[in-house]
Length: 470
Image 1 (cartoon, rainbow, N blue to C red):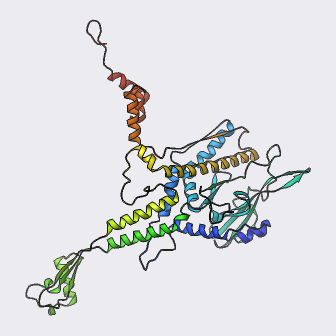
Image 2 (image 1 turned 90 degrees about the vertical axis):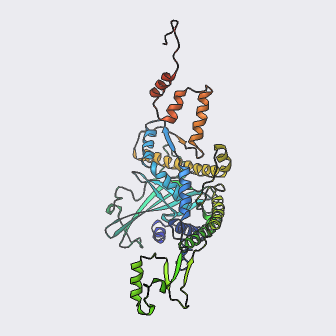
Image 3 (image 1 turned 180 degrees about the vertical axis):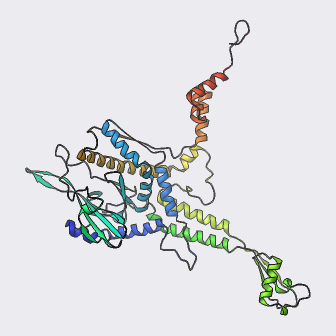
């Protein structure tokens, strides 16, 4: 954290320190990036970066068909517009939180920024409640590296004998010739942040009360922090399964290496390659190579020098232990997935789970369902905080008319199986619970008018008194 010393000096603060958490987060960050400490070229140990896969899968399920609806006023409409701008980034935020344990989402005046623990410095906190934090933002122009430190905090003060907690935001800017240094302090007006204030006036509600929360959202993972119980940071979702990730990479590398080395080899006496009547001694090494090319021999044929009167020929066909190795890999995957929060068998190498029915899925994947629900609950809480921060900024800068708002969240069913749903709805039709046209609209892509017209056309015509159909 190259900006720590400078921040402590310029803001006259002392950063909270979490050495064990910082070490773990850095370790997990490297695993997520695909450079775990167990990579070993000498022993051919590579990585399949499964940590990235589980973070991505968790984010995919957690944000599946997510809907965020903000209603109630013109202010609500403005808030909806801000969330719509970043809708497709929400899945990324969840994935980063899974990888780093915690991410911070903060309005930047135009959109929303995401910060990992590497780009923040916690100053003051009470259990999980962060009361003071510094965000690091940066950009580059040519060979100049600009950095801004933005300090958010609640401050206890007394006004007319009444204790209150106004919110303050302070900004400091720096420029450097190297990304490894924060550089020298400069005026904000010399940067792209020229419209920001170095220090804001105290921020309170219109009635003078303390804000309901800070001007940013915090997205933590659901599991409890057993590394540093007092730290206000979450654990990466695979923090408990690092050993299994290592074992998985080793097992996969061994299996891949065995397959790579399993090529058939034919050892053929050099005399078998000679034209009839040509003594071997008469052939130079280059002549032997030319003879191989003339015969168009496969690359797995290796010529050897015969040491016996009889000509030598042998085929070597290595026997693979692939099935045994895959069974071992699946055992590791099952344990790894369980420790992260997924049901046993959710992750399987090179085969399907074999579950056929929706009820079977629900029964087998109940642990997965609960885990994803926990992640979604954390996401909702973070988005509530972000929307509240946007609402405060709208008040401060008159970005939208004052008004109430209500947020509703909707998520897709992670157990949804379309064919099962289709069969259930057709049963509704055959039992007379719903009209057939609704089925065709839902599953056949028809409009309501098309579906009703088709159903009417298919109805038998009633005979009339004179035998003609109407």
